[in-house]
Length: 251
Length: 251
DNA sequence: GTTTAATGTGTTATTATGACGCAATGTAAT
DNA sequence: ATTACATTGCGTCATAATAACACATTAAAC
Image (cartoon, rainbow over all chains, first blue to last red; front, side):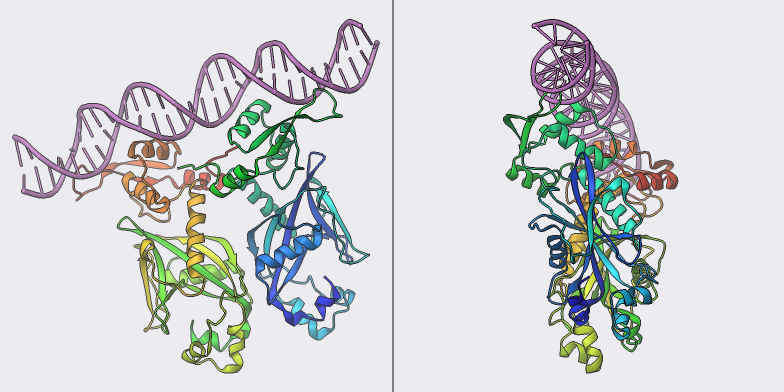
């Protein structure tokens, strides 16, 4: 939350915010980008407000781009949260004072905020956490070790992960989370981490290759213990096509 | 939009609204509940605003209950719409005059509105369209014959139907759309209508019964042409269980 | 009674899935 | 160098799910 914003609250959509659950994958762990709040021992999702002259998707994209430095990435709206008490007592006097927000502008903050949740899948190595100011702490945190979050951000994070799990059955995934060249075991670890479930190596290989979105390279991963696994890339065109048409038809 | 509301705009969440896509099923047609706008030859989705002291889900439930007279029904948030221009030029002077909204309160309406979309599945025969006032026209309309809608309501309706199609693969459906006793062919027609696709009778029967949510009754439908089909009910407990756990696991 | 248009039940071939076996490969220990 | 070991790549088999289709049954309409 920049001071530039505070002075211009009338330029933003009142009572509405954006929160982004930004997922990355590294060291076989699903990571989430979180920000430490300066005024208490809790963390929060990267978020922002919606300029009156911006589409909500654009505002979400701005948050994501501002926090990772990359753009054109996978970003999806998944739910909107608006319980009456969701930010009750949050922007209290102590917090307003911390941000040096004058009392008369305080009303803008103390009202109930409805927040629109987006989740993003980004390349961990390309997405460099960006601070809003020098004091800020923003870090990738293993989704299994998420500390206490402010407000209902835990609920938002859980819902994002639930959505991702469901969408894993409907669309291919990995293009936005893995480096350009990757191995099947790496891709499998990604799936296993998201689903929190072990998958059979051999069946996974069969199923994932049958989708027809992978290009096997004449190249093996180097500097690895044990047998060197083959490297693959995604076939961008076919990937996009499957992403558009969906995986399982069901009926 | 009642006049009671207009006089109390400060009691509602600014710049936010609810729109409900209410689906019913009748005469083998998927119906949508629509409202004729009094000031032009377009229709709109039933909607409303969000009281400051109500959760957004509650506000959606209020809209639905107020428009159909029933409660405790299937209601899901599916997306939030917030393009900058989505209600640009909509609440113009002519409209404000029609509703006798004073200029100073008009600003509340002419700002950009972000709307939270919900879709509902209701029993056509139990849901009686409720007018806000005697002049209002509110009707069930076949989803294939939807007239021109205001704003981005067509986009909202399409997105609701897309969501329903996807969720058809993840959860059972019919409990909220069909009468208590129904036949397999009726249930199949419901699926075919939503999916806009023909299904094989025999394969459908096998698949739907394998889910284990149907109770076959010792009773046949009467007064029908041709062979009388068997009547079924849903096994509420098993239905709820499948609804909770989901249908296809995928991975 | 015969016709007609539906429903109920069953069959078969094909495909997808889940649970494995086993050889190949590259690192690390001896 | 030889061996042990963990991991990868490829394949098999039984079972389940799916798609396509045949045939008998039923009740209203003529």
